[in-house]
Amino acid sequence: MTPESHRNPAITPPPVPRVPIAPPPPMRSAAPAMATATGEIEPTSFFPPNPTGNVSHSAHPASSSHAPANNTQPLTQVRQAPSNVTMPVSAPPNPHQVVNPMATFSQEHTTIKTEVSQPATGSSNTSASNTSGRAASPFAATGRSGPTAGSPTLAQIVRRAFDEGFSDIHLGVGETPRFRDRGEMMLTEFPVTDRDTFYSWIREVLSDEDVEKFERTLDFDGATQYDFARVRINIFDALQGPAMVMRLIPLKILTMEQLNLPPVFKDVCHYHKGLILVTGPTGSGKSTTMAAMVDYMNKEMPKHIITIEDPIEFVHQSKKSLIKHREVGINTLKFDNALKAALREDPDCILVGEMRDKETVNTAIKAAQTGHLVMGTLHTNSAVKTIERVLGLYQPEEQAAMRVALAESLVCVIAQGLCRTTDGKRAAFHDILLNTDAIKDYIRRGELDEVEGVISRCGFDGMCTMNQSLYKLYEEGRITEEVALEMATKQNEMAQMLRGRV
Image (cartoon, rainbow, N blue to C red; front, side):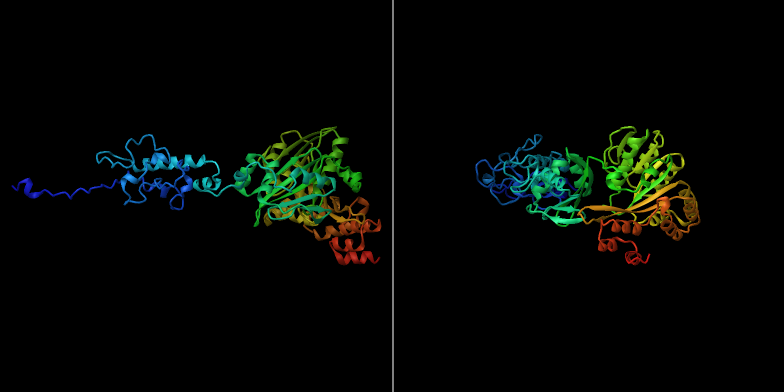
């Protein structure tokens, strides 16, 4: 048998260098490179400044393998080493010691994150956000500082808009603040809004939770209230930066007489059950009209009224009626859920801010059929189109049953618009459909083209078309001929009416 010495001859080790190079601990040299999501080496601004004032390269002890050991500063001069590492950085590792590379990386990564989360005075917050792998938050960067010099506060802008009778406020980064004056945009003399000013405005009306929600979804809907007005807020992100639109809602609710609404509006408020739809484009005064109707019921009838809105706009104080307000996202999660729950809350009238989907329309019709008065809104331009919109939510095989249900539950449809008057104000014009026996029959059979003809011929019942409503305003001298033609749904018919041919 071959001796052991012949099979494995001894190998002479190489001569030991005069200045041995100290290898780093396992994975220590890779920790800075792995601390960022991009794989690049951490910038030196991540580490605390050298107290000696000199630039220290010992933050990365293994960045240069040819540097002499006696010129390398200890790591503890820059940051505190992990407590469980007992050997110095320059010492070679113990060959018999079992080291967990991931534990070493975790220690390094934890140290870096701790140092970044508490930067030294004068350091930038941007570096801190970059180490966590997400974009820097402008809200965190600006904090709660006020607007820049020369810019007003948000409360001052809202107060001016309220005093001068403006309906909307438009604000955005890189833009001059604007107001909407009776349907038309108007520039202001305020300076162009910068980011710090805009974020200080947001901080005036948003909580920290709302700010986090906006950062996460890039959209925000809500409302706030001042001593003189309630404000509906929408914040969104745009190309130049975040922007905000605010709708001013007066605390005092105008009556039907102050709004010059037709007498038929009071008549439909006396129904005990059924579906009332108030429709129109955005900014057409639907909420103001519904608020006047609810205010009339609140003063005249002992009812239990539940409103479901997103957000709550007009706030009613209980008078003869008991009124409960519920806001989607705060007091309930969905319109449909709140509407179903309202059926078990002993209501007499349920106001739904917006019928957005098929489920909400289904529940509203069921509530109207079970003995409740339901009021809701849709974004349509005429009464007939409103019925078509509701039926269009259903499949063709479902529409026959829905026509019967809608014909039985519908009370009226009020389509509304706003036009500029000769005195610089605005007036409402309406398309009013009352669910008479003739209208019910046409809806059941699906002959909606005949409904519009019935509306124009039944003015004695309180019905009217938009053209008839506009022509009445023209006869009263409240609008000009040009405005009547511009706002008419059928301009040829309106032109004939103005010439006296119709």
